[in-house]
Length: 353
Image (tube, rainbow, N blue to C red):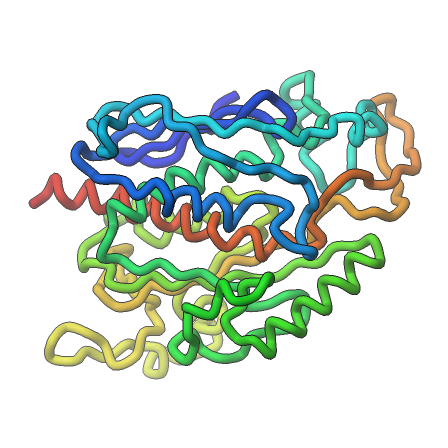
């Protein structure tokens, strides 16, 4: 299986399955001498871990990271950083009923057809549990990018939208509620919507907005390695993501050029920021902001038609512990992937200077 690595200079390779002994990763390219805050790394994992509230999966995993290499006396050595996270609360019997069945909108069918074998326990390698490894690497990337501020938050659940622009929000309130929306009134509506959906045995999608501030000018490469292109790839690699837009996004397609252009100030900043902090694929020093769309989780606790491996249409019903809405737990994943992209281009820029 290819496709298990992300990044060029700051590179993460992950391993493991949802119901295996452990998941983990190797980080290559982290510079030596970076003093790590291990509590901050664990805090990022705690934001992503299952079982943290009543509106997420009730699988109980401590998600404690164990570092195996690349760190000495609390500092990075410049050698590969190996780490693992033990799986402690697998209930593989919850998946016995799908051993020979392909669940709708899952990776079951495509994995089986591509590899001729699949780990049906929790989806195996296709499980979102793998994203815990990204959060570890992203937490280290954040510490490498100490001057950059990375804040993601829930901006919609179903048809409930946070209409305020990010400039009007207090990001310190994002962690004040279980849906991770920095507007308390909108957050409560989102929470109640998710609770209703959960009682129905159904799921619901939503969006996450992410804002990157104090990003230096010059990150990104022209043509094929544009900064926004790699941010898009990073976000689209996250389980359940269906869309990515940055800056004015699709709304910009409705505008005239005279309306959309960001006119300059004398200091190189711009009066508006419809470009989303990136021009010509290169950061311009303005805030980078983007939005990521997540589909409803594919496992619903309702009866649905499915296909078995003998070609028959059969009736099945989802079982086990699943998120009714993946968005609240995906906040630290979106931040982590953004940090990995910025760390890669930060190191590339240092080679030029």
